[in-house]
Length: 269
Ligand SMILES: Cc1cc2nc3c(=O)[nH]c(=O)nc-3n(C[C@H](O)[C@H](O)[C@H](O)COP(=O)(O)OP(=O)(O)OC[C@H]3O[C@@H](n4cnc5c(N)ncnc54)[C@H](O)[C@@H]3O)c2cc1C
Image 1 (tube, protein in one colour):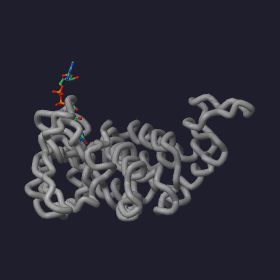
Image 2 (cartoon, rainbow, N blue to C red):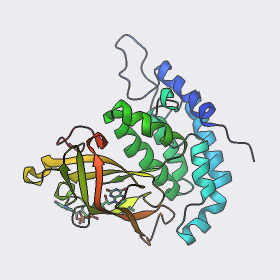
Image 3 (cartoon, protein in one colour):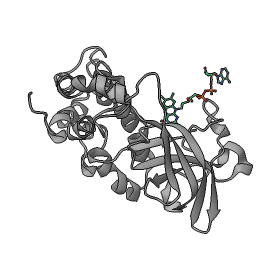
Image 4 (cartoon, rainbow, N blue to C red):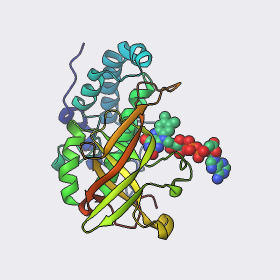
């Protein structure tokens, strides 16, 4: 098997895409050349796709059936995803990442999905929900605590849904009661992707239920905190290797510095 490159060498190449202006979100300059069509990948993007394809073919593909049967992600897939720099694609170099683009993350997710949608979902949640929210809304202290680990070893989950609030997310019942400089979180989340493996959670709780949805605040909660319990894994019909679990918060005390974004200004809006 061709050896897999390290994160810095794989996705560092794509960082050049930023410099060359290939990033699709970049506005074309009025006096500059038109951006290439979206279906025409640059050399660097093709290189990312090739690398992910090799990882998917060589490491994931032989394990797809076993992982599905056992409803369990194989450790070599998890380790490989980190070693190949797939778990924090957009994270900046100063936090140990390569500062690649959202488009690169999409290419990674798409390529993985061709072989195993479970692995694709596993990588997707980390790259499109967990990391971006910390990048965009985190304090410097939060970024330093979480981003280097997201790139190298830690999995995060996005814990919003509850038994009676799926589509209607604003109806969530989990509370975060203020107690001095702390908040005490109580409630349960349902169907949370990657919760089986996660070391930390982005937890949505209402800090001021009297204000309705305007009280919803997001907290960064570590799995090791007292009162956090990850429940049973769902026995799903599809994407079985991706863990989907409930999480229970029983008087979980967090400091106000664990708020992601502004208090009372929920990150959903
Ligand atoms: C595999 C899997 C992974 C998941 N991962 C996560 C995760 O990581 N984090 C997380 O927070 N949640 C997660 N979820 C939960 C997911 O976000 C919810 O299942 C989803 O929001 C739908 O909510 P619900 O299941 O309660 O369905 P409901 O909200 O009960 O909706 C049922 C049906 O009614 C329709 N419907 C709902 N409201 C209306 C309306 N007002 N008008 C018309 N139609 C309507 C819906 O479109 C749907 O077809 C996951 C779910 C699954 C299955």
